[in-house]
Length: 189
Image 1: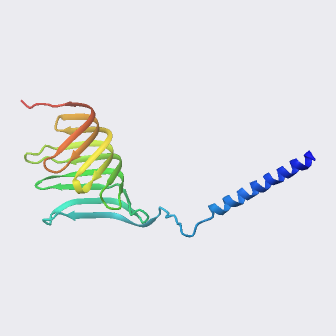
Image 2: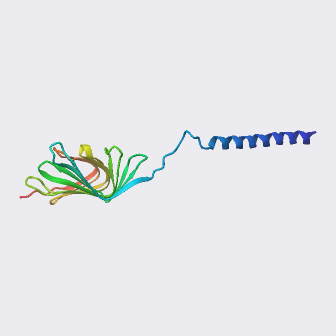
């Protein structure tokens, strides 16, 4: 009698396990109303050179890249060897170069990845500036850039090293160094 009772309980447990397995397979079957979008390139361009004009018809920004790959699912763009030029009225432009880049679908955020170089040439009343860092976040519409990485700034014989930086590249130009700031400023006699 006990053997028959154990056999009955074992059979019921076996049916429960089989039923649970069958139900779990039914729930994981693809729902026809739900589709996932694959992150796959829909087009690419090589030798990209794009200039955005300001309201007066003068160049405002220029983006050059060896290769640009667009992704339809999030409208983002990946860039190989991007070079961004930010023009500044009658002053020399800011030139920003990196190894790779990612541009958001709305164009509001440009992530420059890898080694980043920011340069501005000298002009009358304008000191040259050279900035070296990594992994820069750019907001092109606001002429604003930031990073949490190590930063090296050089201008003539002056130099500053820091960790983290924010720069507003429009007049008046402001640079905020975030931590571990060390520098040397040489006064001309």
